[in-house]
Image (cartoon, rainbow, N blue to C red; front, side, top):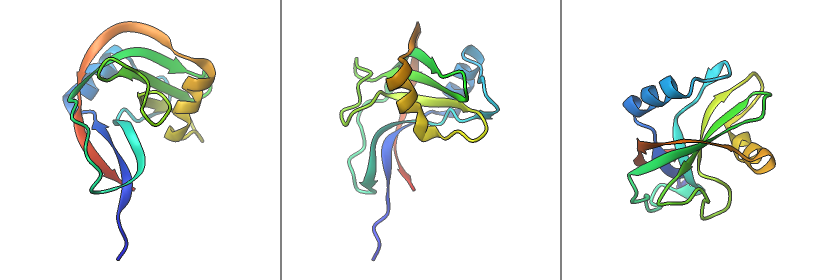
Amino acid sequence: MTRRRGYVGWALPGAERARLLARFPARYARTVAHHVTLAHGVGARHPLPTEREGTVVGLADDGDGVQALVVAIAGTTDRPGGGTYHVTWSLGPGRRAVESNAVIARLGWTPVEPVAVRLEPRFFPL
């Protein structure tokens, strides 16, 4: 029997997504704006996070096809396993969501006026 693998984090509810897209328009052709990852490569029985809200605190954009919103959860932007809490916001041709963390690490992010956001804890199968 194969165990289902995936990641846990928070889904961005539709109303929150729409509200944030109005405030932070997608710069690139493919709008993602889907979730914040907590842990990758985990099984379906991995505990879900308990937090249900975050705060958008920054924007990262490499100018070449990766745009991400930086999110603080429980007062921090630092993900426990390394990296930065974020939502991949939009992508240009040939770019992938997995690149967002590297862009944030390499270029940093620009602070924005904080915006509270409701989040839904979830397991996302791969």
